[in-house]
Each structure stands twice: as structure tokens, then as C-alpha cells.
Length: 167
Image (cartoon, rainbow, N blue to C red):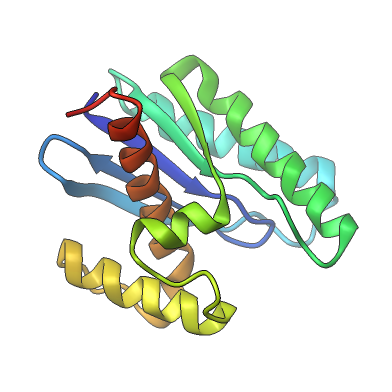
């Protein structure tokens, strides 16, 4: 396996990255911001179309599509919406990825050595600093969604190694 497309699903900003596992390098990254002035169905459709287009740009596809699985949120409505986003993104990725890996939020943090008990904002800043240092990036404070997607990719790579899918 050599290319992981990782996504940090969100209703406001979806961070994404491509991790080349052979070179242990981030090959591409970015963020997609769905329109906020439309209803949920239109927003889901827009996200599906965006990811399908992004994946189609890679003629060969990706070996793995990894995304953070929403497992907890204080607000049940938000949790349900995040789950819908994750499902739509997974569906868009299906034709282009050989395997899908769901990453739990704790796995994303642990993959980079960030304590689970660290508070949300501090953890996001810490993840961004680590990702910048490890991969030689210069992500800014408002690019934490991209840093989280990179952490998802790192966690997926670790999972693949544990499963014997990558050496």
C-alpha cells in the first residue's frame, strides 16, 4: 500500500491529505468548506461531489480511504449530522479506494502521541505543531482541520502496520 487519502469530516470545513506511506511524506493537502447557506441535503450533495471529483483527479486512485469516525458529541443532532457527512464521504470514496479505514478520535491523537486527556483547543494546536515538525509543513492556526486529517492518515498507517498490510 502506498497512498492514503485521509479526511477529517466536518459540517464547516473538511480537512484532507494524501500520505505517501512508502516515502512517509504528505503529497497533497487542503480543506473544503461546504456552503453554509444551504440545507443539509444540499450540503451533503456538495460534499459528495467534491470528494468524488478529488478522488477522480488521481487516475490510479488510492490504496486506502481513511476518515475519522464521529463517535461522541455533546449534541445528538450534531453527532447525527457528522455521521451523515462521514457516510456520504465514504460512499463518494468507494469506487476509488481499495480499502476504507475508520479512525476513532482517540486513535488520531494517540498516533502522534497527544494525550487523550488534553483539552480540545490545546490538543488541536499540539497536533498542528507536531504535524508541521514531522512533515516540514507550515500549517497556520486556522488550518487545524488539515492537521487533523494528517493525524488521521498517520493513525491509518499505524493500523495498517499492526494488521500486517504494510511493513
